[in-house]
Amino acid sequence: MGRYVVQRCLQAIFVLLGVTLVVFFILHLRGDPSVLLLPANASPEQELIFRAKWGLDQPFVLRYWNFLKNAVRGDFGMSLYYHAPAIKLVLERMPATIELAFISTIFAVIVAVPLGVFAAIRKNTLFDFVARIIALLGQAIPTFWFGIMMIILFSLKLHWLPTSGRVSWENLVMPVIAAGLFAMASITRIARSSMLEVLNEDYMRTAKAKGLTPDRIFFIHGLKNAILPVITMIGMEFGSLLGGAVVIETIFAWPGVGQLAVNGIYNRDFPIVLAAVTMTAFIFIVVNLVIDIMYCLIDPRIKVSTLHNTEGSVR
Image 1 (cartoon, rainbow, N blue to C red):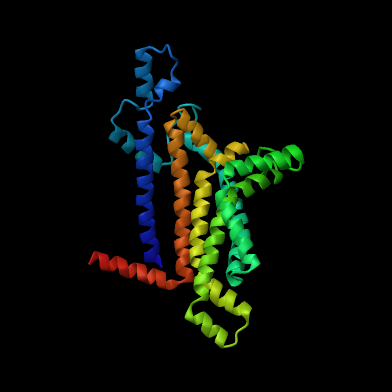
Image 2 (image 1 turned 180 degrees about the horizontal axis):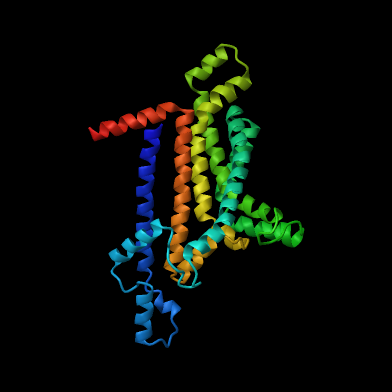
């Protein structure tokens, strides 16, 4: 187990380096932030001073190397727009984004796993048909449209829920449902297809022949072997919600990292965007590492086969 975890950690480091390099490169393609942040009547001398102060007069490779050295120490520089430490601004917003992503994922799992499993068990019944329709609509309905419709209905018409903010649990209801809708649909489909595949295995027919109860067959033998693809999808959806909830955060004025990052992109505030993307990628990588470890605990054959494949490739 220890060797497997070390191998995954090394891979995670390279992935994080790749993410920062790509984002760093794309940000610098957008142009010089001094064009936006300096007044229109700024003199060439003021522009030179500004560029030297923020390191914009250095070559790209040197800027990236300095960024890496500082990022290792947790220093992503000062925000060009807010004039405050970028990492501080991101960490202030991160709890709101994690809260929204985590609760949305929990909502999606609670609805999707039972829905997908029972749809597979009751294949080609009315329940299966309804479950597939729900999954189809969940993936087809645009998130922003669904969020706006909920605001119109539950806030403006019925006055049941607040339209925006992060004050109480009531502010979470609509953003969680809107954000978790697509994840719920995806997990439902993968849970159904994975369970259907398991139900056709020989050991399931053997269990039936032995006279085991349906509950033991489906939930002890079936669900345990069908859960691995579902865990993968849950991790992917959590990562997507963590990094892609900017639309929901904008619609419901949720004070998360997504809004901060988008504002940073518009303002060419490189430190803010780099800090936001790096922290989000780091959390996503940690989540995937935890999922890999869970894989090993659920099915140790995965660890053994991975290590054997690695040794074979080295030879």
